[in-house]
Image (tube, rainbow, N blue to C red; front, side, top):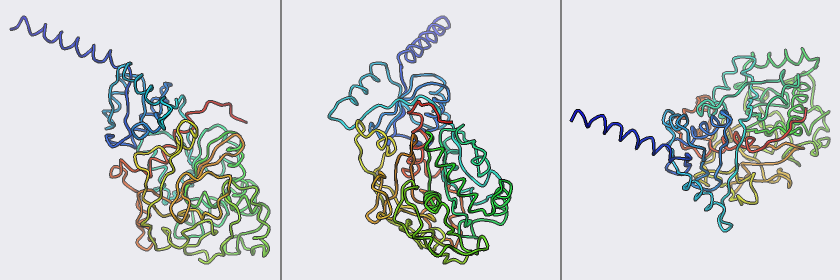
Length: 430
């Protein structure tokens, strides 16, 4: 027995090694068999960071990922709790042949670089406690995808072209401090005033317009912009109001231009046109909407309401409409609505040139477009898993625990956008 034991150990070691040698690829399924959809994106990003390619299998088992086999990433999947399957080279080739079938709405997109990610946030310059529940910051951290913070000063200094992907969340680019003082603290306001003064702007609204133009230039030069909540709405309002005073004396000491509405130039915006500005009905202290772009005015997290409906993702052709197909990859096509200061986009204010990728019966929720050499996506709402609404109890201030939402289809849309720039190799415009 003593003489046969070493032989058996050697035999099983050889078998084990042979099994690993036969495994040519790792499939990370994104259908209902996936144990953690969100962390799966982190694995894909880690592979790209390791300068290896990732095949994104559009519409195959929920938009699965396939990578070359390595013990390193097989172990990483186990550590992070991500389901995976080992494939032989023949098995991987068989999947690709199936996907190539012209009768099937599937395709393979190869991701080949890890995008440099930045999040525009007041947390860069101050406490900004409200940023603790920024959905994108939450999911990037949960998925273990690295990012940097920037704010107004970095934009004004021209730092954005150093990066590939920029996120904006619940920001107010009109210079009205969110029109909700329950959200923005006095220290947040002072930080913006200090930056405006440093760069020679008489008003915060003028500084924010310069920042909005810098963001637009970043996108036009080849960057990728992803905006949610009030940032998507106020960015376009600021751009349309270039040279027009739309800020009341509550915020800057002088009154609004009485002809402001008629002077808006919608040719300067990303997504929206023909919208009407809202007056400061909150008097600078309570919830207030910016315009009728927001189709859910009064029901958002500051308005005391909640959302209980659903919106639907469009089914794009993976072989012909590759970009929207990438951005809508999911294991579910019907997604529960969620609120925000800007909850959803009024259909009549969305430009015909804007591609709608997700909508409810009453509003558009998920938009895509191109700006110069770059692309952008606007996603309505604040947090895909915080549907509590109602600012009265402050529920919207509590960060979502993504350990409880590992299969969130709403959060998957955010992460689709994070990986999207990895599919492009291009020279940046400086």
